[in-house]
Length: 379
Image (cartoon, rainbow, N blue to C red):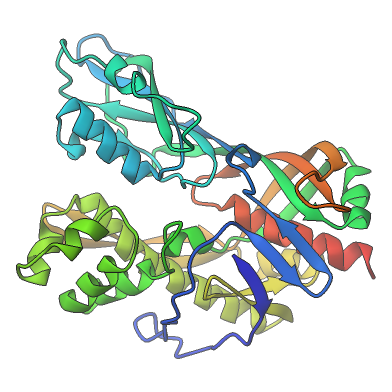
């Protein structure tokens, strides 16, 4: 995704009246280009490794709820769940997962499968493994536990990321320390608003849901490159009926995208009330980046939390729940390796490791980490 200088439109503060961007730039691997600041993420899948850290689950022989470790590349969690369900000939609703992982990278997470027949051969999935294809998944048995895995039941994620196309001065300056105490504005990043290869419109689909504009939502789904896109393109019934037959977790995802866009907008507006920031667009999604760590910490002290409306589909009905999301997140970024970047001549690459709590975006952490480093080291 390309970052450029643009003005951030600040609309009505009402949660239901925020003007949403209708641009449809396609989601692409992270690239920051702003004046002298450049970097690239996810040049190759192994540049971006993600290990989900699950909550504690109590083992149980009696309940026979099987947990597996899912490793994948080249597909989203939703696509992986669909593939597993098709291979095992079970409903997707029988497969539980805690968080959604992107297709750009190699990711690992825990899933559960309930009502799994004793004669089901899990090795049938791994038998189809072709790690040279760039699109694969593998399951490894963890054991039997007392409960199914549900959305949100994770502690967070650990990351090992290669940051490419870095200015040598910035890369070497960062590598002088073995680790960095980093704080950043906890925006939802662009992955929340689209899928790789498609436009950033999931928040617009969620907005259409919110207003009952099912025909508009179906049209956007058809163009979205989402797992539902092909089925939507072939749908001839009433638009609302198409969405009623989807996995409720998919509907909740679109509602959440809309809420995430609103949250980003209002937090950026709140930050601008007291501080200056760089106004940017990332894949048609607006952001305000802080110029200094002192502004980040002042914002954390003044506004540590901001309300967020969660929407879930329960028994076919929309249920709203108010919660609080931290505006600022702290992490320690460990420097693992500094090297010449063979993908970008005369540039450097930096390999880093860090942990983030559930719901935070590593791409956004890196974005602000590199931007703030540039502001500090080039003053």
